[in-house]
Length: 169
Image 1 (cartoon, rainbow, N blue to C red):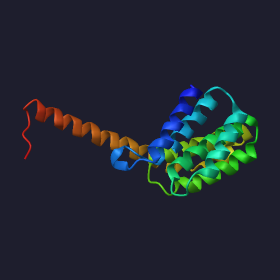
Image 2: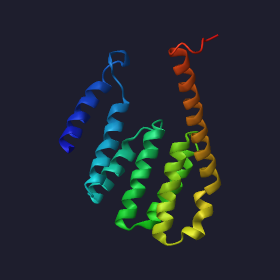
Image 3: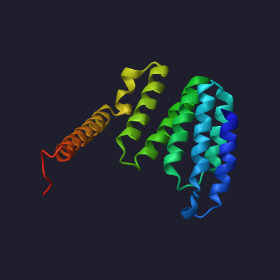
Image 4: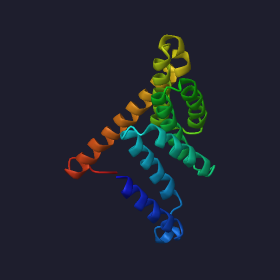
């Protein structure tokens, strides 16, 4: 699988040189690096993944905030696996600051889960629940549920229109 990632990175560099109307994008390389790091994590190659995350973070442009958040979450997982819990906590602090720029509940939940994992590994989940921000996480989960209910309602209306049981105005 790493060979496919390497091959994809070569193509991503070629695509970055193309105009966007011809399928070019500067983001392909960054996204493939994140996928490659995930492959290393799945293979439990923690040290190689740590080096890849460090390299990716240093070469990542400042405007690629979503990729930075993904890399921070990966770095936190690596630090937990390597036993660097203080480093993982600092990384989670960075991820918390980074996720504040987004209004995406799933990303907030990912950061909260990473913080909870670090707190659990440090043995103080009860003491650190305030840091994990349970109420905002609850509200984010509730917001996602409301969005899914709205989507379900829209699908039901569309089905009625398609079946001829309801006419759009």
